[in-house]
Image (tube, rainbow, N blue to C red):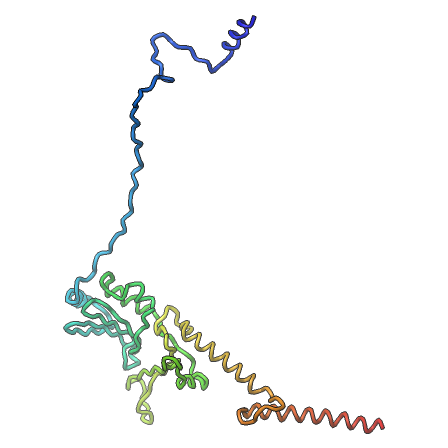
Length: 279
């Protein structure tokens, strides 16, 4: 009876397999005592190689030869043995609005109205201070898209910063940038010499992407000066303490102190007057 049940169970099992005549077994085969393992094939990794840009100019002579063939409208060229410079005038000032100088090692510097850009300017960082991999035509187009920083406004408080120097390095926080006008611009005989005046911070960008507001460096100096003026007004308008020395006090503090004392005296007088009436 048990044998019949086992046969019935084996017949009902769908996964059971029967060997066919002439077939070759593929599973549970005997293994060699020293069977060799086939090495696994690794995926081929494709390395991305960075493309090295080709040099635009080989040396200063190659640059002079190529730039001399360009039609640079409004730019005047000056060739020297080891240097090359381009100047762009706006027709109003005697100094060039933009100046591009290239040395013998293809390093370049940029100036606006004779004021050279700081070393941390983005145009230097982007091109690594060299025209080896950037054409002069592209560079002057990029320069002409920049605006001159207006600097700090000309006020009494900002002009006083011209005389303040850093106690550590002795450099003034604000510097005057004077640009002479062309004599053809003004025809006033009473004024033989006219200039455009800018007040710039020590780290002024000179050329920036926006032409409305001052650069970050000049804006920080201006904000610091405005805050100092506010604190000065508050200090001047505050009356002196009772035993404060008068020698180091300002005129405004003395006036505020006298006004405060008069108010207090008037209050005491009114109180005593009311007391006399009550009696």
